[in-house]
Amino acid sequence: MSTKKSFLSPSTKENLRIYRYKFSRNKLSVFGLILVCISIFFAIFAEVIVPYPESIGSFVDYANASLPPSAEHWFGTDQVGRDVFSRVIFSFRGALIMSLVVLVISVPVGTILGLIAGYYHGTKIDAVIMRISDVFLSVPSLILALCIASILEPNMMNSMLAVTIMWWPWYTRLVYGQASSISEEYFVKNAELIGASKAHILFKEILPNCLSPIFTKMALDVGWVILMGASLSFVGLGEQPPTPAFGQMISDGASLMPDIWWLTIFPAAGIAFMILGFNFLGDGIRDMFDKGGH
Image (cartoon, rainbow, N blue to C red; front, side, top):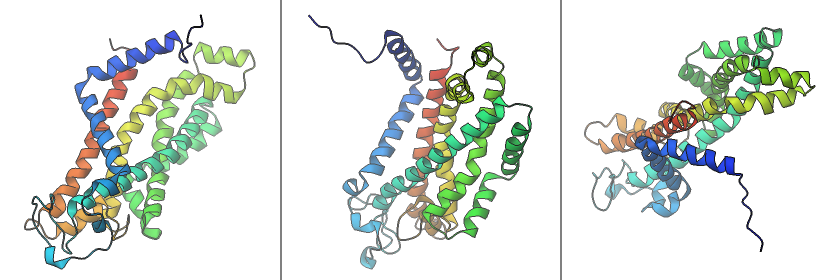
């Protein structure tokens, strides 16, 4: 009689069980995971969820302009009659796409450079990589992103490029600190003695021991990237009308406060919703990889 083999080894199953227990122990982390799942659901199924999909584009209905929140328009309408709820829900997509693109590019680049600099700690390679990183880190993130985005044509793609250019050094600095100490450990020295390649040492010996802080920072950085993207959009350097974006909607409604308050409050609440979710999730990931936890 044949027994069904599991794809996971007993030790892997046990580790997953421990990770799940550590994560679920923090109720705020579970709450954050729920918020993140809701945000992703909004982003994927925005066209299906929104009650007025025409409001996503250059729709005009002056007869229903600037209406306050009601049963028909949950978040009210803007100056040209577009449904604010529909536009807020659709803005989740742009915010998540920006976070995904920025982190997918900046994390591997920053991690690889950090690994190389950490492994060759004290050499010219270390000095060159870290001095370049320090140049980027010496300028406030938002100022640097604004400078880069203002040089380029204002659109979503260029705003993502601007944020990516100033984001990778944070991961280089983070991984550098980890790799420079791990490279002195006995298991790394043993790998060198048996003739292991540099690529094997970097990606098989050092990198796995750096994943915990990387994953934690990634979860926390999603909120910061969303906030950075909203800031660029607020000053007109991000997503361009009529496509909705959180920062752009807040900017449009700021001059109309407090009379037409819903144009600003609800997009700001959308940003807070996503940032809280990813920050709580990041805390859970940190607890999950905490070796001192019980």
